[in-house]
Image (cartoon, rainbow, N blue to C red; front, side, top):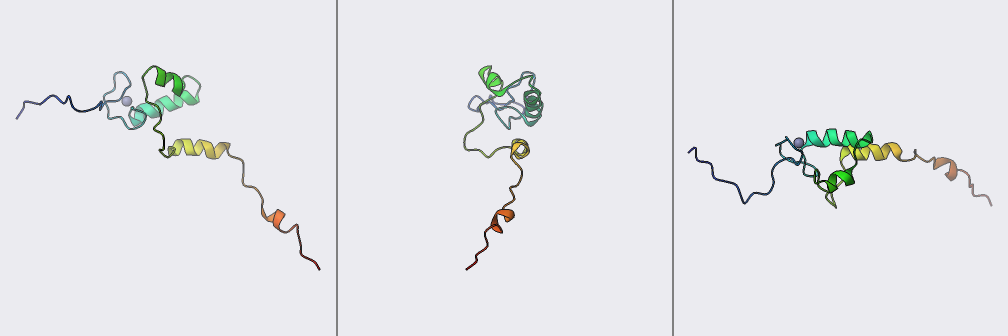
Length: 95
Ligand SMILES: [Zn+2]
């Protein structure tokens, strides 16, 4: 059969970025667009709230775990390991 039915019941199954028809993975865009977009955001050439307002991306789904890339950034900005051992040996019980 070469007669394809129109898929009107299907939700948007295309990347929201113009001239891209890949399957959306994150924020309504495909992984390739997401990577290039997040790079632009990191370089200050774009920002997520503005892209959301323009309808180019969807807001990050709440309740979802952070992406590995975001987790890596948070690890970089997090303070280094605190030395707990020095604090432990400070108090010595003596009677
Ligand atoms: Zn795309």
